[in-house]
Picture 1 (cartoon, rainbow, N blue to C red):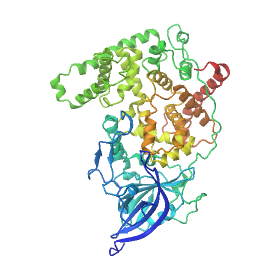
Picture 2: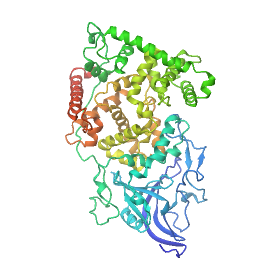
Picture 3: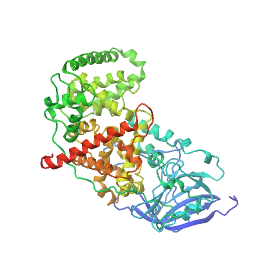
Length: 628
């Protein structure tokens, strides 16, 4: 591009481009009409948006984010509108340079094309097309909604100054490079999109979500879903750099209307059963459980009578083998008691002087002591000062650090232990039940956070199949990453339901019926229960987060369980269910080793499905009126 140009040059202009703000006050517009322009100022090409009222040519306020370490300032006056405890958002970063502008123009922005990192395009299924731009600082700008078309023309104009390289992971995501950049030769995987921002920030959030700010986490918000999405979209073969490709069959080329692609069929009605209430009838003369699968089926269908939880939970969590006799269980308890106290002595015998030279152990202890003092204090078992329940909670968590020193203690583990300790009211038994629970969820707490990324991806896959319109709405409001579900999946909805409801929910999930990812179906049921509130309102990114976090203690567990099971049955009855959805539900397992064939996995899944369907049919015909 020539350097000797006039101070201002108009290159491209399009009217009817609306900006959706995050304004929280009722006297501020949340949808503002305006112009999108490509201009050159002093020879520097930039992408600008300004409101319709501001029809002058003055430089608008700069909204693009600087990179970390370049003067980002934390806004201590930001009020998210709810208690930030374990909410994904607590404080935000000021992403704008302060430029005095008139009230109507406060949302205008100018982004030099050299600062454009990515561009994401999509078509909202109600007919609204939108773009999300992200700067090299990692922060997305408010979505730009093209009510009158023009995105294709904008992309063509941009390609005179930058290269837009389509991501092989998400056909709607384009990475921007200078025309002379050699970085284009790098594959998307080599860009390490989540290495610097995602994994580190999420792990910091895991270790201390109370202190970690969403201002940093927002760097990966837009990319979480995009970077992790599997290449299952036909849009991957398309490129904005080739305008000769055939147009999409909608009113504006280049946008993919996201649908499941198959007819799911009606969602069946599901009823719940009665809780497991007669334990002795399932034991033989030597105390073995005669039919473990029947026990699991009954627990899945209706939970467990409170008086039996202390015994049955030890089987569900692997403390006792299902085929063990009463005598063998006595021996197991004796051996496990000795093993527990040997580990407990290890940390109890560490002197203060030794601990001063062991920063890792000291850090674990500090975290545990802090979390114990604020875990379920409303429950009488943990309430008050000098409560022995708090001492047990502390000691079991410290001993777990000795059992698994590599993982140690991570914030949130106290939430997993407290219901177990409440039910067993036994230090040794609660410890070994915790180890069984952690076998299921320990990857949630690992520093790499690969398991959490995978679960968010799987949840996105399910929601896309179930409700593409809701999925696209969240996407249009910068919430497509589903990051607000992070806490749900991390500690299995511990903060979303009442303490008593969590006892029921967890024992249902511990059965691993009808599939290992049933907790993701619970999340889908919750999201779909809020569909009308979300889509039929003026929610934006901030208020979606606020609304989801305000669902705490307002959800009806039995409705969510029925909804999740109904979703499962609806999906598995679909004859043309997408492969990705089948994998999430365990209906299809690709062969990865010779040790376990796909056939054996498939037959096990079909057995569980048959049990679930048979139980649902029996419950509907025999005891529909008695369901809780």
